[in-house]
Every structure is written in C-alpha cells, then in structure tokens.
Amino acid sequence: QKAKSRILIEGANATLLDIDFGTYPFVTSSNTTIGGVCSGLGIAPSNVSHVVGVAKAYTTRVGAGPYPTEIHGSLGDDIR
Image (cartoon, rainbow, N blue to C red; front, side, top):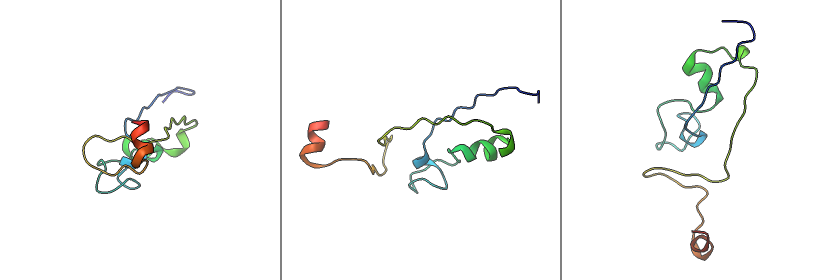
C-alpha cells in the first residue's frame, strides 16, 4: 500500500438488503453498509479515512419484499 493512496469503493445495495440489518428474509448474502468494506474486502477500519453516503427517502425493491415507505390510499394513488 502506498502512502496517501486513494481507493474508491462503491456499493450497489442498500441497508435494508444487508444480511445483518436488513428486512429479513428479503436480504442479500452480504453486508452492504460501510462495515461490509472491512469484512468483505479485508480493509482494516483504521485505513478508512473518509466515507461519503448517498441516501434516498424511500425504498425500492425488485421482486417480493416489504415496502416500509409505501403510501396506501388516495394519497398514494395521487403520488403514483
């Protein structure tokens, strides 16, 4: 490892799909949060100096599974 080298790591799944923190049983088989960088890639937490998180205010899913942010009724119909 070079001093002051930069590595960009991108995750494709969200927290609700995380094996430990997600909406079980509708999860993936790995850790999708920042802790997954350490456990999945073998990078020590002391080597992670910056984390940039991107969040959205709603949940999307492919296939079956819960939608905790889904709005039912006439308001949901209007939004859709």
